[in-house]
Image 1 (cartoon, rainbow, N blue to C red):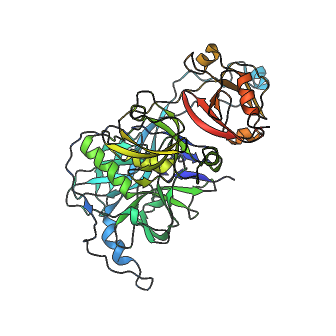
Image 2: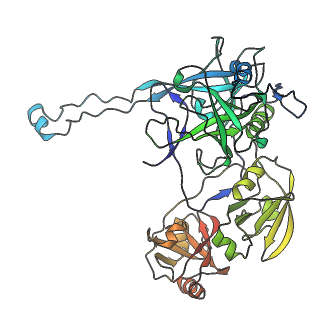
Length: 507
């Protein structure tokens, strides 16, 4: 059975949403803005943030236990219960279309009067962290998503109806407010300082049994590629501290008693969705920034470069004559976008951001997303073997859905094994949602067992360049591929109006 990433809200009436973990394949990103509008902006909130001058918590050891760290923080972790109305599908009589029963009881057997689908109330449980004495709470978006009623229960048994201040699905974070003051609030730590092997403790309400504390270590940092939210921003802390359904939105703290993460998901290989030692938490540095934007501006805004970036694989590094696979490859540049205005081009490799090395495309995407629109950044770029610096003033743009279509073209011979192509006509371009003047050859079929399929090439893709040479017909495409002399070929592929690079073997 394949592993799954599960959002760890605890349902009381229905099974929680299970999200499959995406494995392998080339990944591309558009750096865009996003977020959900908050109910009111410009709020003044007091947050406790640790710094180097903060007093160090009592030293802990296995002999003494962790009570000195845990006990002061228990009142700051709350239980969150939500409810929403969901439609019930109509249940069909299994014998309704059985000829035997119709013979004796008529064609009206089993048919009830036509009714609209009825509704039922769905209940679920999660956790949250009080981050301000004035009643502000940080939790996961999936804990409260779609809820009509949100109730918060404190450790002292008090219960409050909570107001949703705002949420950001792209990071799976939400901010709540309850009408209470003088509450115990957690101190924000520095998640950037967390290292593999550090002790951590998870606090939450697993399975609805009540407040529970588990201990473990940080088993990895910077985890991504979980695709919990499509187009989301992932930079998880991974831990083996036991996390289970109902822990969503709870606290991950260090041995100083500081909040370092918001527990979010688990990786499980069974249908029950229980803990198997692989849990994920949103770093508190990210959570704090998102929360402050929601409270101050009423929404989450992200910097926008106006480029599509992709991983520099070893094959792409070789094709672009790079010494390593570090950096981010520019697959496309949005017309009239910030990067376009600054002179960025397809095929540029971004190696540094404001003088700091760019490890990969995801790290670049996270850094740009954390910056404010209007900020100017310096990008260190390699272009055709030359190094240059490009200054870009970030913009802000809402996300746009990717166009998708399939061509009605027929197969034609191709110089790449397992790939059939045809010349792109204005009619086919229209079917694909592309401008009529788009040039290239359209992929009409890809053999699933071929090496080309492993690169992510798929039906409906338009190949516009082979080894940086434009192609406008099947003949030009085949000649360009054959010119590779059996070596790998670098293709510029247009999918739904955006381009990216792939490297495929040739015959």
